[in-house]
Image (cartoon, rainbow over all chains, first blue to last red; front, top):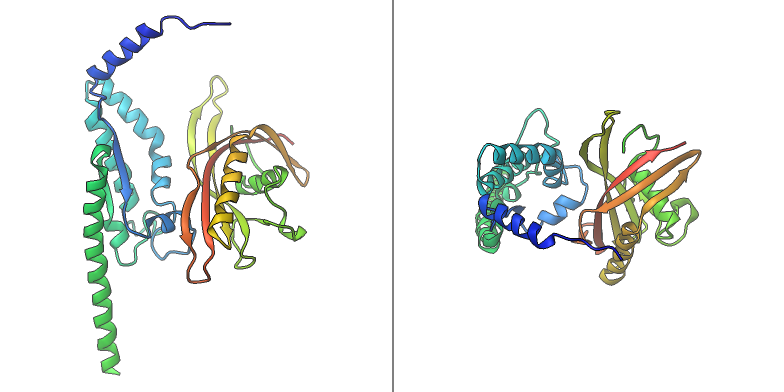
Length: 159
Length: 148
């Protein structure tokens, strides 16, 4: 049976590199917290603005570019934590960006709540960040629905 | 893998799933019909394969051929949560086992090198406006080459 030698040495080297580049705790999450975020992301519908797979698509498109940026950043002495944050923000920006020339891209917008529920956070703070983003997006959703109700009532009154 | 494809990756996966005994062609009127590109309103119990965004995997040397993964989504719709989840899980496991398999559509032969599942079974919920059917998705990236 074959054996692999030098694993202990490799482990030590990897640990030293992890320390050098600040890898510990360098883990970011990009997400959307609205209740219907998963449904909109996974189910294909004809949205007026945006499209389904609004987070997966930018990630896949940017994947190679982000890896290159992180590699170059490390080579130039940057720290991994800030490089990962930059990459996460780039994905988020592409997901929520509204472009008149390409209305079929990015997160679908109706009340604006889903778009507002996007967040980027250190994975260790995920729960708190997601809850905060949800509260903001819910406030936006309720305000927009109230606005629509008022304008509907006004139109009815006019008639 | 790259190169031209006469059928879309979603269509290829439709035939591959039939080959893996996970469903039937809609024209065969069997259980778990597999549609592609669009999900019809009926029957309640069905599978749909959809093309999604792929991923670039660089170029090979020395031929400079572009390598890419094709993105595919498998959407499973069932009349209840339990049977839908069981079927979705079976499809996910079947996809995990795909390695160097060929599948034929009409006169075209496709070699599927591998399928990388990018998610577990995602429980989407129910499609309430039309009914109370349960929806599940499985997402994957496939490397496919047309051989004939």
